[in-house]
Image 1: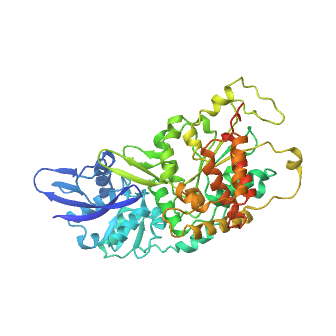
Image 2: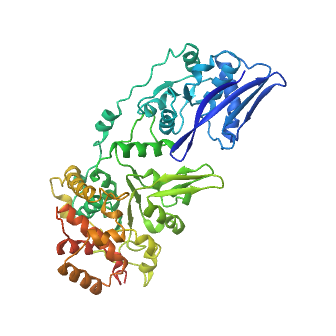
Image 3: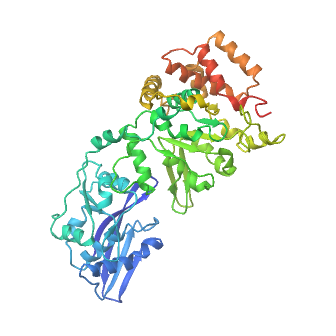
Length: 514
């Protein structure tokens, strides 16, 4: 008897429906699995047989063939266990096939029939609704994640027996999961255990990060150990505009595919902050593997990627990040498949000014020899620095600032100004596709949006000549000045906006490193 059940394979951040065909023949004995399964899928036959025996059934003394279609697409992972087991039970006459064909079913089986979590439940649910299925059956721990998809019945189960009874009883015994995604999303949006109010002093650095957040600019913090670079960077997401529901859905899909969502969670409500160690590989940062998975830059989508001690990262790792920074997307290409992952992130990097960490320190002398500082800075390539708009020098906090009472300005107040500036930019770029903030401006658009008067032109020319700023600093200064003007509520870029933007180009100054 030929029976069909339906599962799903995740490619990139989207899901493709997989048809599991099960048939049995009287010749020979055993199980045969075809349709380009990988090792994990092939091993499912042993798990499936043990789980079926655990609920009181045994396989017939015949040959059972399981085909995963389309047969030319590689199938990976252990989540096909449950639909294969149900297909075998239906093919051997223990379950009615019609109801099975109304559901997409996914889940990994333990040897005793218990269901274990799967990756990618959210994109699988979205794909099931798109394909017109009545519902989705997944392990109970994934039900809340998949349940945010409307117009789809989502059922969570803990054991093969529960799913078996549900199908045999015509859809009775399990209750569909009800998730109020908007309420859960709204409640968790502003929750945070860190705040800019906890940072004593460093008002100029807070101002620089406010500008970065308002314009979506990449930034690098340069300063000695213990100056607070990491502490400040970790608080940047608290002043970014709240995630919109579409952004939260896209971010959650990426984390779901990577298996990074906590058990029982629904939507990611806060902007992600990713801080990989400097020993990370190329594939770990941008994504990859034999079965392409999202890397850190995709996990930071719609949030912040923080690279601490930037010169300690391998140069090859940093260089592969350049193109995704421009395109806000990374493409992983293999012989038979190309997978796209979103990668629209803000890059915040930090570094010491030299190997000993005390170059330009106001109190401690630098012990580095001649040329060592420049050699250390050269570990970060010019093309990568070209994509960083703000270079911010961080100095140690004085004792009098640490010991003073009271609290600094809260993140909520700073975020209010950032949101107002972003709203000005959204109105300005409303008719342009792919441009949402000042950092995304092209060179052509720069001339239209960042016009300056004669006084501003004179100031900028003088700064470039006196400070020996490089040509690449010109566009960056104009973009940052436009953001500063937006924060001030100004329609035009004034000289004071340009002067502040020029201040944030430390590494472009010729002779900065001696």
